[in-house]
Image 1 (spheres, rainbow, N blue to C red):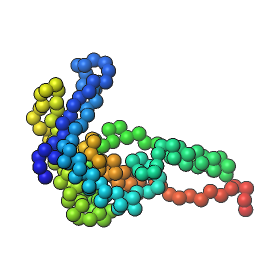
Image 2 (spheres, one colour):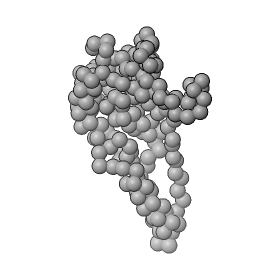
Image 3 (cartoon, helix red, strand yellow):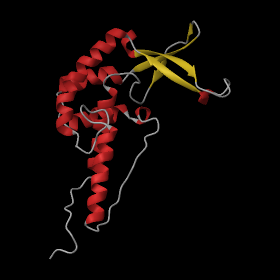
Length: 187
């Protein structure tokens, strides 16, 4: 893969507060246009298999689903729990720096476990395993810096690859179990 495709340019944008504090900046990743086209082609191939794998309980980054849908479903569950006087345990997770937390080699292994085509796994691997960033401030760019973990910000594949990793974690933890609601008043 051409080096330019694996190199993102990060432009730090000041949010608020002291300009001397790095935490007051948000990095915007600019990816090579040809790479973005390539990534979208891979995404098209990933989607079909991913939609068969990812459980209905995942709504993020999925076609035809929104936060509103997830809230509606949760409200319906709470109403039924209350109606049938049952207990419920709910887990909400706020992933801080979600993409940055992904271990790339583990992602490749997860794709194998979910039986993605070998050729597709190799192409994804080429796209994510060895990436670089250059930081651009004003008209000056840094030398390339190797990025060893995480998914690329701005990459079309990142949201669905993240969902695939979450699916693996959910299955490993066995936290998604279907339970039948029965009224305590019924025999």
